[in-house]
Amino acid sequence: MKKLQKLLFLSILVVLVASCSPIMQPPLEPLDTNTSKTAGQKYVPKVDNFVVLLDASLSMNENGRNDFLVARDLVGQINQEIPTDLSYNAGLRSIGHNSYQSENGTDLLYGITSYNRSDFHDGLNKIKYVGGPTPMVEALQAVADDLKSASGKSAVIVISDGLNIDDAPAAAEQLKNQLGESICIYTISIGHENNGAGQDMMKQLATIGQCGFATTDADLSDSASMASFVNNVFITAAPVIVKAPPVDSDGDGVMDVVDNCPNTPEGAPVNDVGCSLDSDGDGVFNYNDQCPGTPDGVSVDVYGCPTKLTLDINFGHDSTKVGPEFDSEIAKAAQCIKDYPGNTVVIEGHTDSTGSAAYNQALSQQRADAVKTRLIEKFDIKESRLISKGFGESKPLADNKSTGGRELNRRVEVACGATK
Image 1: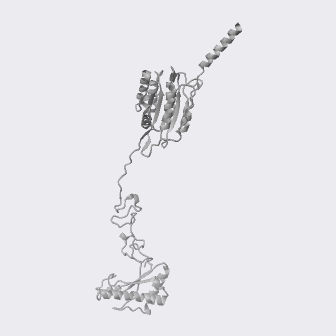
Image 2 (image 1 turned 120 degrees about the vertical axis):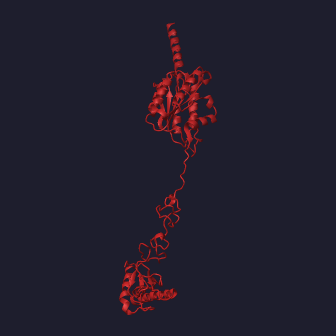
Image 3 (image 1 turned 90 degrees about the horizontal axis):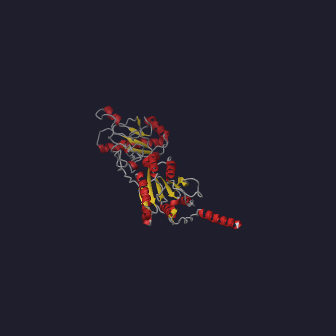
C-alpha cells in the first residue's frame, strides 16, 4: 500500500512540475525579404537611433490571452516597414521574461548597432519564454545607458500592456533628464479592451518624453495605420535647399560658378568661361593690346606690339634705295632674325608727312620691300619668315615740321624679337 501511495505521489509531482514549466513561444514568421519600403530622396531620417522595448512579462500571457504574440507581431511589422534606404542605429530590449529565458530583468536582444532589418528580426525571435514581473524601471535605465554615447536624436518605442509599472514614470523622467531634447518616447498599449489603467500609464510615459505620442495595437491594426506610425517616428521631409542666385563678381557677364578667370578687369571682353580674349594669340589680352592683329610668332612687348629693331638707313626724300653702304645696319637685322628662329618677322616701312597720305603709304611699303629683298638676297634669310608692311606717315617718331624730324620718320623697323 505504501509503495502504491509513493508511486501516486511521484506521478502527481511530475504532473505539477510539468504544469509549471513555461511553454515556448511559437517562432516568428520568416521575414519578407521580397518587399521593402524606401523613403526616397525627398525624405531623411527623423532620428539617428531607436530602441524598442518589448514587454515579455507574465501579464502579457495570462487569462487565456497571449498579448505577447500581438506585441511581437507589431514589432515585426515596424521592422518590415522601416525604410531600407535610410540609416539608423538600433537596439531591441526585453522588459522581463521567464527565468528559463534569462535571470536578467532586461536583455539587449539586438544592438546597439547599425540597423539591419534581417538581424533585427533574428533578435526579435530570441524571446522564447514569457513570464515573471515587469521590470520597466530597469529597462528604461538600461536604455539610458544604451544611448548615453549616441549622437543625434533618439526614439524609444515601448510596447507593453502598461500593467504593474507604477514606478515607471519616475524612471522615464530620469531618462528624459539624462538625454534631454535628443530623446522622444513612443508607446503602444496592448490588451486595451479591459486595460484602461495600463493604457493611461502608457500615455503618461509618452507625455514625459514631450516629443513622442501614445497609441494602441487596435489603432495600428491595418497596414495604412502602421505605415503612418513608422513615418511619424522614423522619417521627415528633407530640408529644402534654397540655391543662392548666381553671382558675377567681376561683372564680365560670366557667372562665378563657371568663371575660370574671376578677376578680369571691368569691361574687358571675355570668352565663355570668363577669361580675357587674346584674339591675335600674342599672349597680351585684347584689353591691353595696343597692336591687335600681330602676326603669329612675332615677339611682342607688354602692350602687344612687336619688339623692334630700328635700322639706321637714311632714305632720301622720296627714295626707296637701300645701297651696300647700309649692309652693316641690315646685318644687325639679319642677326636678330637668326637669334629668334621661331619668329615670323615683320619689316615695317615709314615715311615723313611730305606728300599725300596715299603716296606715302605706297612709298613706305616700297621701303619695307627693299629691306626685305636685301635680307633675302644678301643675308640668306628665308622669304617665308618675312612680312613687309608699310605704315606710311601714320607712326611718326618725331615732329615732321623740322628737317631732322622728317629724317627720323623716314625709317625701317624690323620686329624680329629684339628689345632694342
